[in-house]
Image 1 (cartoon, rainbow, N blue to C red):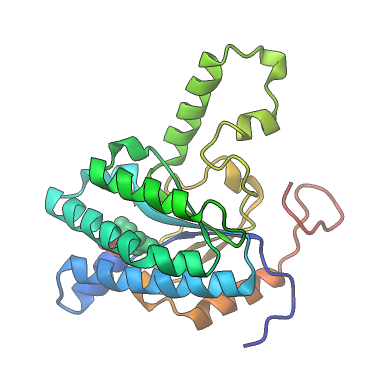
Image 2 (tube, protein in one colour):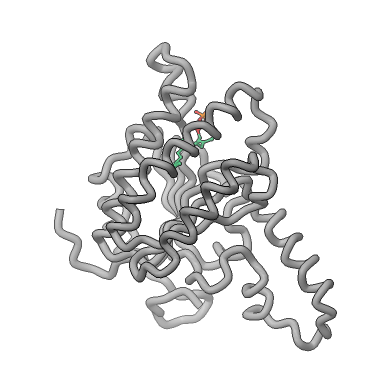
Amino acid sequence: MLLTGRIPRHIGIIMDGNGRWAELRGLPRIEGHRQGVERSKEIIEISAELGLKVLSLYAFSIENWQRPSSEVTTLMKLLELYLKKEIEVLSKKDIVFKTMGDTQRLPEHIQGIIREAVDKTTANRGMVLNLALSYSGRNEILRAVKKILRADMKPEELTEDVFSSYLDTAGLLTPDLIIRTSGEMRISNFLLWQAAYAEFYFTDTLWPDFTKDEFLLTIQDYQQRERRFGAISVRVDAP
Ligand code: FPP
């Protein structure tokens, strides 16, 4: 498929439906997560090829800590395997690896692997892969507020831009498009501040079935949208 229009600069994805994908096949839920990781690799690769500036993937929410500990442990193991195996691939593709979220809650050894991956890719110049881990938008906003209070800032110094610079996404463009798979139509605490002017795309497809082709169709759909950001005339980029 040929994409002729403008490519969104930042896409965020709520990768939902791994569990249902597995249950529909009579498989353990973890098989769905395993397939989900494979899908993520494919979407990361095509996103970098298309020239996206940022791809944010919602991999593990703060709410996900409430899942049975066996599922949490297996998800952490998958994350560890992914990072250990893929960091070379990301490096070769000039991708910058970043995370957002309350990552101090992650097991110590995973924090170490994350630091390594961040250090190893920090000088890259290509797409930023921003993985949301132990993330929720409200928690991110609250942590930003606490940092601002500690910085002893005067109320009149606090602008939207200053506030944004205290969020985990500091320095990243705001999302143009947010995709959610699996038929659920809600934001589930993802990029709450940053999504103010994002376009949304919901699909019934479960994440392990979300192919490159559907991703390209999603971008094509986005390219038909008229973005006005509250004004009358069409603007191209999010403020
Ligand atoms: C939702 O499925 C998905 C998650 C909880 C996150 C898991 C994400 C992955 C395994 C991909 C991770 C990607 C990388 C690059 C490490 P669900 O369990 O909520 O599905 P359900 O709603 O059908 O139960």
